[in-house]
Image 1 (cartoon, rainbow, N blue to C red):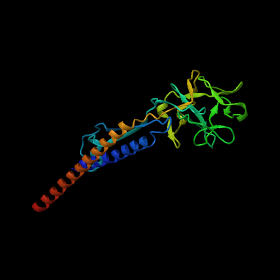
Image 2: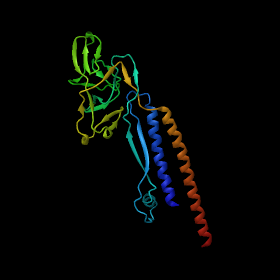
Image 3: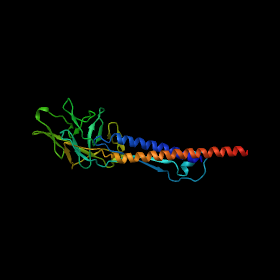
Length: 250
């Protein structure tokens, strides 16, 4: 009975984390290039059937304590036309490369860019977007910024450089950081600049979050949470009855 309480308490904790993941996905459903978080709950494999007086250990040995895994879903979102010449959408693999205030390179699929007061192409957060020659600076007197599908950047007859895209052998190892960017751990190594790229100017990639599916998951979490709460209450009642029975026969 004690094992059952520990198991259900662990389930409640996992369900709370799942609910937090769903809430984050829904909150970012309208953010360009956002990649949803997947959440999975699995029971530990059966390790040892020996009885343990420690309820947590006993529940874990019986395979009852759930484990939680979170991953990023890198599937492409829908293409949305905006008509803005500083909006870019990636078709196929790859990430834009930007630079934070510490000079560290970060990666994103969010191509909703702007020209700041220094005439530099930046993200919504103000981070400079990097081309093959570093930050991309434009001259407002030389016409509109034009980016070809292969990433070539120009203003009129003036070629400014190339907007590179980067990819990783294992994107699943990327870490999500503040602002919706991704950062590669040192173990991943350097990203590879893609030779074949496809960029659409005047469009952005929408989030790959499906709000209806997330709402369905939210209902499932709520029902599972209620079931676990009832189970905890039931186990607690059984323990109380057992204690009362033992006290009566003592």
